[in-house]
Length: 124
Image 1: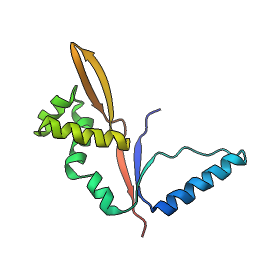
Image 2 (image 1 turned 180 degrees about the vertical axis):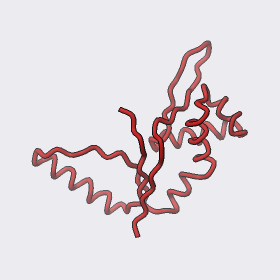
Image 3 (image 1 turned 30 degrees about the vertical axis):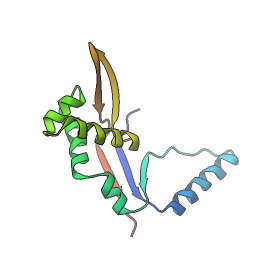
């Protein structure tokens, strides 16, 4: 099943642990728990450091142009392939970009974005 949206949340470590404890309690009681697709940051400054304009530009370019390699993506966004590769690894670790190895002569890594939008929730 493809994810249509990714939720990005600003949530304290305490709130994250409290939520995890609630899930564990429900599981112990034999209750079902719905899967939650989200990425949490402890504060907005950390989110801004992770989701820079250049990284968001990569996500948009992957979605729009469907590049066949990191090198091709770097050409599209007019950036050095080494820095694009580093940004893609971070986005992959966050779960925002899939990196699929493809063998054609030499190995290519194909970046993929399967969702349609990023929803950001900032508590006030």
